Amino acid sequence: MPDLTKFIFSYLDQFDDVEVELKPYLKYMTEYDKKFRFSNWQPVRTKLKNLFYQSQIINNYLKNKMLFIKYTVQDGETIDYVSYKIYGVPDYWWVICVFNNIRNPFNDWVFTNTQLQDIAECLAKEEGLYPYETYYKLLFEENEKRRQIVILHPSEINNLVWDFVEHLREHIGMKNV
Image (cartoon, rainbow, N blue to C red; front, side, top):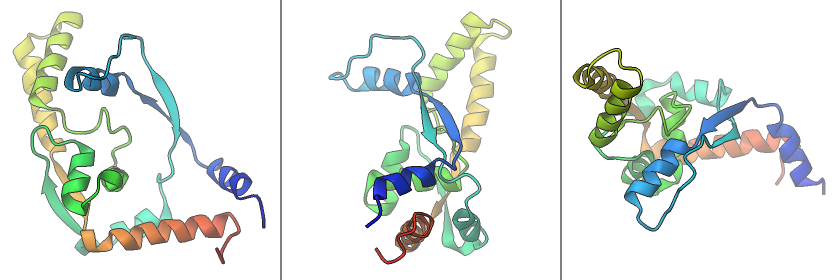
């Protein structure tokens, strides 16, 4: 049997790296989970493989608008919570990201009202081009647009996962596994 790890890593090498800033997520964890302590406020970055960018599988699903439902994200709903609410598990947050072109779930997801206020306050202090109210209004309007997302219909989630597994098997030479 071929070395599965070697095949998987060689397959993953073809995908571009995406740099993700983790500081907003860690700050969020510090503020809302009192057990979590984050004291290093320096930028924290990591590289992840962008497995879904321009994937033919994704494009095939996007062609059929009947496979999707419209969803409005409520204030405070996290991407994993929406996954749990729709699919029964938080594990399919990545599906929501893929079909809504969310490349960085920490920065591209809907902000809470508290986060908007914090960002507006920070921009008003650091940039100082506009008063707090102007920054808040601009951020609020952009945030409202983000609330409208599409969700792959729950009846299709197993088909999507199966398609990805089959695609991976084909590319690593393990069609019969």
